[in-house]
View (cartoon, rainbow, N blue to C red):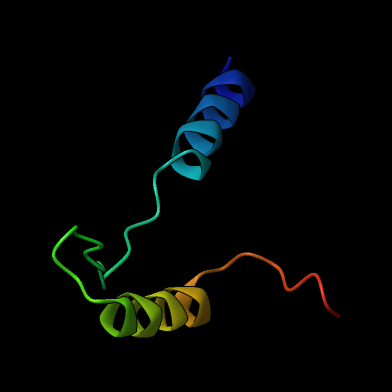
Length: 53
């Protein structure tokens, strides 16, 4: 019983959402240059793997 509770506890902790601190707003009022610079910041801060490597 203790093992089951411990397993559920670790499962709940591991499923917690990751909080990101910097939010980038892609609104319709941006110019192309502003969108491009925001997109570069987003790509640099994202934790997706680089497929070029």
